[in-house]
Image (tube, rainbow over all chains, first blue to last red; front, side):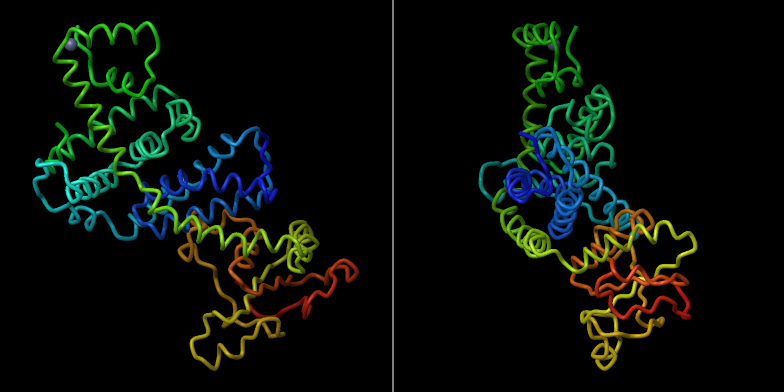
Length: 176
Length: 199
Ligand SMILES: [Zn+2]
């Protein structure tokens, strides 16, 4: 279905379908729920305001994801400049053992550690891992959104996972 | 030859093309070491993906943003707002006027008046002289929208943003005669020339 972004009914449709994934991208790049909300709001306002046409809802979705990801990355970069890297390093998660596995608390803690690890990934790896793991996109779509080649995506996904693995190993997260 | 992590990750993501895919499957069927590594990578992927923001976490934000957009955009569009009409007339003129200075004058209640008295004087829609106290540089750090630097926004975008936030925005041109009065219906407090310093 062709999408006209300023058509109210279509806007609502796209919003309903795409907001969750856009919010995931914004959140997993910034790890700040309020900032993520602001970013999504900005992305959808631009979408509505620019009065654009898309061949399909997927195209509209990729446009929104790209804008959101850019806003989120810019936010992160600015914040890093502002606070410097020192706080970042101080903010290492408390060590703990999560090897027992199973209950709700452990799950929450594992989740928190994963989120912290993603947050530590350098930008170009963070972007691919967020789009891969949280926006559920394939290499081709990720390549389009990030404007890099598919094989570049492939390599980055692999490297990002490798970094994640070593960070999570250090935190003794149970990845048996 | 055994499989490396790169191949396994690609296979895991369902992105490995033939004939490699079949070869990998074959290898995994008889090599316990690679099979074990594959399971490990799969688990890693699941653990990472499992940390995703949940629907319950998303829902309140989805509702909140929608109501903001409904209030400020969807519902507004029905009545042709005075603001947008004026904007459409005004902007091309600004763009073509090479020497035009643009002062974005923000008069609103939320504001940057430092004292209560001062703020009380700033009533939306009321004519005021432009002076440095009411001219506010819109800083990039004020909002997410400005993750780009302010320079990369068009004037129209800035005005729309401010309008969306509920500011009463008046655009004035310095050293330019007023817009054609027939097109600038009801242009408020038109003071085409201001001697005040401009941002
Ligand atoms: Zn093997």
